[in-house]
Length: 305
Ligand code: M7G
Image (cartoon, helix red, strand yellow):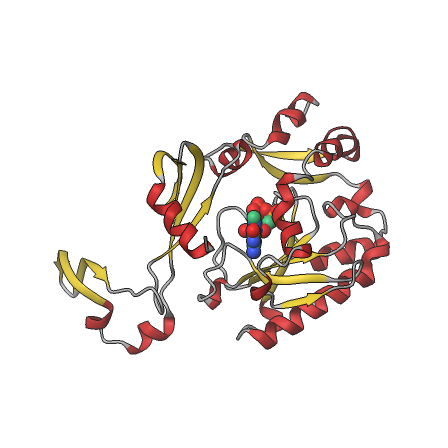
């Protein structure tokens, strides 16, 4: 069955059981449900306005009914129904995770966050052993992209060299239409860097070349200048295979992914290891961690407050 037919089938069979999260700012809802009795997660995100349409169309082409709420002096406020079409101006982005693991369900659920101070000792004793348990099925999607041709029709750039190469492609968060929300992901071919903790002075040239290539290719491919890209890594990332987030600086933010306490500019990483080659092996790293994250209990047991 084609992937397109499959997603229709998933949508038809999805039986909702619980709202995991709603966000009025990002206009998203994440719903836990079941498909054929197996856990699945559906997330819906309302899309942004297509600026070209809004600038040219008369209001009659944008909305098809209006309900006045009230008015006062020169002020009128109302509700309206948007006219949308799937090709040029879709109303929402719909994602599924199926089958959804317990880790997925915990990741997408509402949760309390804490700031963690991760000393090198905490990293060595707790975090590194945890990372070692996260490399199998959890990153199958990464290996599918790198080694099995999955999503290859969408690659923006691909270099095959096993050590220096990488793939640059649209992130699954992006609707591929809204340029202000441009969101790409770069996944490196090498498998020996799990996170920023593994970066050291020997990686400076390697990272600088990747950054230069990303900036060049993205600015040729999309109407976004090289200096309008925010290039960063997450610590802690959800997936422990080195990848770089490539996001339009105009992106208003999505969940906590752009927050201080999670995102680290790759230019800062490079500068730090240029000055101190073992910077990321020696220093305490501060970051936010949700209580649902499997690492939180382990970090707490180690005495973290
Ligand atoms: P992260 O920092 O490990 O996790 O980034 P988080 O941002 O989800 O906390 C992983 C990035 O990869 C995220 O931006 C995801 O949206 C993106 N991503 C995850 N998956 C499973 C896929 C996928 O299958 N395809 C693509 N293109 N992007 C994905």
